[in-house]
Each structure stands twice: as C-alpha cells, then as structure tokens.
Image (cartoon, rainbow, N blue to C red; front, side, top):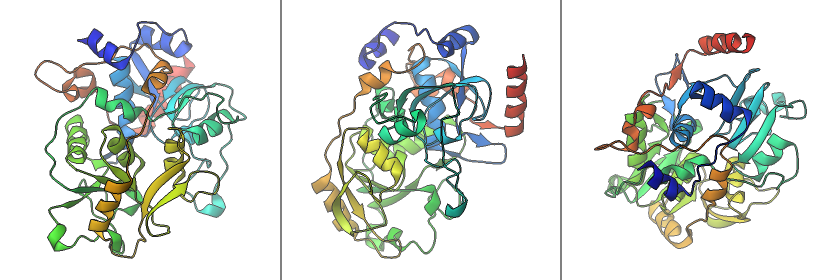
Length: 366
C-alpha cells in the first residue's frame, strides 16, 4: 500500500542528505516549530494543527514540538509562522510569513521582520513569493517553489461526502465572538446574517475545533459537505481549492460584490491570500466583497461563485520534491481512514509552553 501511495504522490525512494533528515533518521521523530494549542486552551485552530499533521503524513514519523525561538535544529511548515522563528538551524517548507515580527500589535508598535541576522535558515519552499522574499531576504524566484502543504491533503484523505449545504461560509478567527467549535460571529457583523428561508442552505463554519484527530476530521468533513465555499480564512480557501469545491475569497473592502482584483503591489486583499494565489502563478483573482455591516445577498453570492470560479493548477510534484525529509508517506489502516493511523493518533496537539522551553534548553545544552 505504501508503494502505491508513493506512486500516487509521485515520490522516489531517494534519501535526503541534509542535517535535519539525518537527525530524524537517527532520533525517529521530526522536531517541528508550529502554533499548537497551549495548556490554557481547550481548542485548536485546524490550520495550525495541520502543520504537524502534514509533516507526519509525508514523513511517516512522530512529531516533536519545538519552540519557534530556539538554538536547536528544527523544521517549520504550514501557516503564517516564519516571522516568529529565531535562532538555530531551521528548514522551511511551504511556510508563510508576515512582514512584521509582531503582526498582532497596534500598527504604531509593529516591528519589521528581517532575516538578515539569521544564518541558519534553509528555505526549500514557501507558501508563495511574498513569503519567499521575507524568509530569504532575496527577490522573487530565488527558491521558486511555492504551495501550502495542506493542498496535498486530498492525496491522503478523499471521501465522497453527501453535499448537505449549498454554501459554506468559513469565518476567520478575528470575526468570531468566542472560541467555541460552533461559529458564533461578532454581533455587529451583519454580513453573516442568514435569513430564515436559507438556514438549511447557508452554513457558517469556523476553523476552531476540539483537541483531537476526530475533531479535525469532522471539521474537514463539514467543509467537504458544502457545494460551494466563501471564506475569510486562508485555509478555508486552501481546503476548498484543493478538493475542487467552487469558492471565492470574501473580503470586506470594495468594490462591493463580484469583481476581479489585481494581485500586484497595492492590492488590498489579505497578504496571505495574495501570497497563496501568486504562488499558483496568478496575477488576478475573482473575489466577492461585502462590507461588515451590510446584509449579504446569499443567492447573488452563490451565483457569483458559479460564474467566476475555475479550478486552480497546483504543482504538487515540485513541492514534494522540496520536502526536506525522507518521504515515507502514511497510508490508512485497514478498515479506517488516515486519521486512525497510530502516528496521527499519538500526535500531541496541546503543550505546556514553559515545559517546551525547558525541554528545548536541555536539548541544546547537551
């Protein structure tokens, strides 16, 4: 089964010669910096958790979480996390980055992210050219391998779901009123109001789940049960595009309704969205814009998706070839799905941050 999956993924049996791959062969686990849940959280963000999932799926190895700031050897993968990585030797694969070291801070307190002082960064692939420039400090095309690793998920998990909703609306964390697994949007965001006659057709979804593989699988199944997707979440778009679900980004800034945005300099879309689609070789992107405090015409939006969306081309082979570890993909156990595999089942999704830092310090002092 594994050889069949390797063939499906377009993989070879070549072993990687870099220090990270040698470490993983010696220790049997992948040191990975990722934004997992802390001991004070009773939830996880599915986009963050899939960093560890995708590395485990492709390497066949257990995952050891390592702090982003460390002097140790480690890998970084899914998510806009590159700007938070400091020190040590780091291999980036499919990673995104913000132009700010502290993007959550008020605008007048933000600090520019600059890699010029980092000598241990090895970039094998990034989410797109914007992240490539940030993580290499060089011009677009220096590495030239782009893609969000989650785009590879359908090669491991491709159910045939019954379509339950005409439209799934994936809401970004910043628009949520809480961190409940059920999507509760902030009360003043009128664009998410759904009239009674569409309650069974339009379904709000968030990327918050309980902690566990079953919850991750259930959320993905929920997304796959939608005929169309509109999303303010980056990974909402990745899920939809990778599984071939017609979709559009859902920005708040106009022009209102369906239109095409130029993805060049000055584009007002979320930079993560620009990065993703420019990484696919696109210079323009259809979107459906709707102000926060105006009601959405859901029928018009669904018609816009049907008229504007086209399948995207993704160079999976180049991204796989750039994977810095030996490729030993997992396959679903007999009678189960890939989510039942022991490697994923024992993946620790919640950590005590102070304990992570102590363990990392002991590792680097040895």
